[in-house]
Image 1: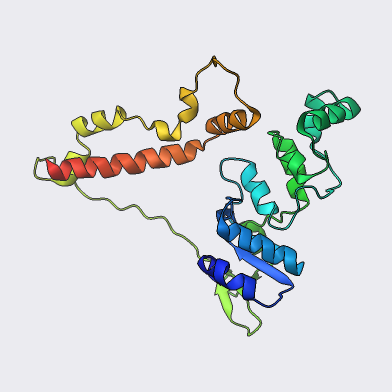
Image 2: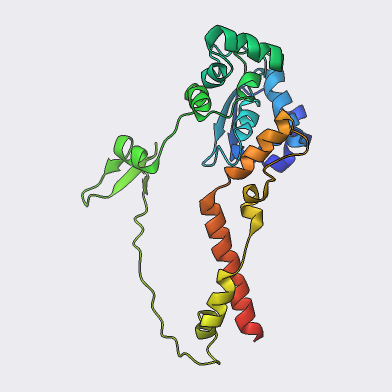
Length: 255
């Protein structure tokens, strides 16, 4: 079922014991109508839930908890607690009491982990729920090898699905170095100089946070501020290159 249809179709759908959600990282907004429809269906039918995603985590650990909340109630006893956060608050027993006093929720719940920004806490939590499989792992453990040495997966009807073997190639073309050659102008010194002067604060907002606040931020605001510093540098570099290339090409054509 397309996710765009869940609001209308899920409430009327008969009970299924398993709900399989592809591209689950798109369900990060707990206030959304689609998210609510899926959560209510899973709860009402006590369905098992399987999430598939190649991007389970984006910018905040709350992206993970939002996906877990599809089938894990926030107050359910998980049998483990955010130890790194507890230790930060004063150790095993003192830290637990301080956590409960400060956050007013069970220390062994998903809601408790949502208060932690420690990677170790989230690694321990996700060990309980996530099965990570890389392409190389699948090839080494599930694939067959044909007579030529190529790896493939075999379906129940004996059809073979081969793993692609990308072969990088260098594509070279000459630059005339004239004002009429758009590609030469794209890589001209003047264009490169303009590109080097571009700034994209959208992908580096953490650099613009005021060091001293007139008023201390709330816990929610502080988590948001912290997330600004964890923005992907690779994304920043890719976006910068993409925008610069597009702007440079546009500039060359206009000139």
